[in-house]
Length: 482
Image (cartoon, rainbow, N blue to C red; front, top):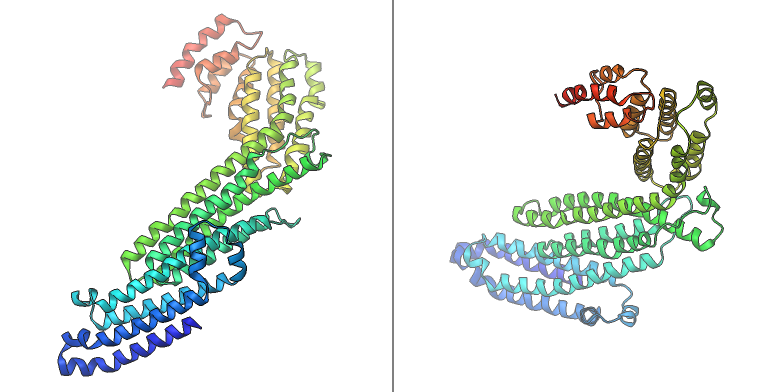
């Protein structure tokens, strides 16, 4: 109602200016246009202010603004004004109409020095600033309270990996920022872009990170789904949902950022200075996205430390407990059935693989990468503490190849680079003659080990003499350093 009133007022005033401009310019000269139009503009501002004051009083805007400013609870006030969203829409429309009218007057006055300081322009600008001051305060409050409500009403569909918070929060941010941009006020749009980015970081990101900080409980059995305690099970589900939420929100922020850029280009494309200022503010969403991505890394690390490492480390540790100085008969038996390798496959199948159905694909891939990296580093430390003969080295090499083949079947990316160092250690431990090491290092295959590390591996062979190892060591140093 009030927006329609202002629209008619500005349209009628603009029509008067349009009709009288040619007559005034021809009779009194173009310099007289401001003087003649001043009474018309003063009356327009008077009626606009009257309309704005009636709007602020009728819509209870001032009381709500004071309560927000004083950080009061607002519960009773909000019940009296349940349509705050509609009030904000009306305020934006009113300012948009005022902005269009002001730009029209400036064009008619050719935007000379006299017109820019004309009280008719300054008065309208002050009126807009007063209205937008209330708007920014209420819109910021609207975003915060709406997101907090979305948090309290958060639900998750069993068929979805994320909760309702992801779509709700991003929708609210998109709605508020797009509304502010529609006001055609650069300062208002910039203020709300900054406030919206802050709300994403404070209300949404911090809420999700608080769930991550609660941790992921250690599973008491190989399969995390078998947990019998309902609270533990709930904490696990909350953790996994929060992890997916962080990832999905980070992706949505990038989409929101691009959408805001396009809308600003459409609304302010003719004003380079305003557009540059807006784009600078929108870039703040990139920083918020980084905050979410950092939180996602913490969640992935926490999940690996709580759910994967405690199960897989004890199995891998059995490598150092068994002898690697073996006979041909033992090698044959272990090639047919290897309990150590079977146990690793079992743990991965029961602990890691089920996570694929519970996590976004990229999160699952990251968890796999973290787990594989940690496992290979741990296995390397263990391998360098054992003693081998050639058959033991051959067994180690076969185990690694089998492990790479198995893990490649559950990943969508190549894992061979993760096993590069281990594979070369196993190759050195399985050589029949020391001369083969020199032939290998001089081949086209990139060597991941230094000369000292190769020497350390050769010393683990109980059938190689130290003097023979030392003889080829310096040759390796010279070649690798070339």
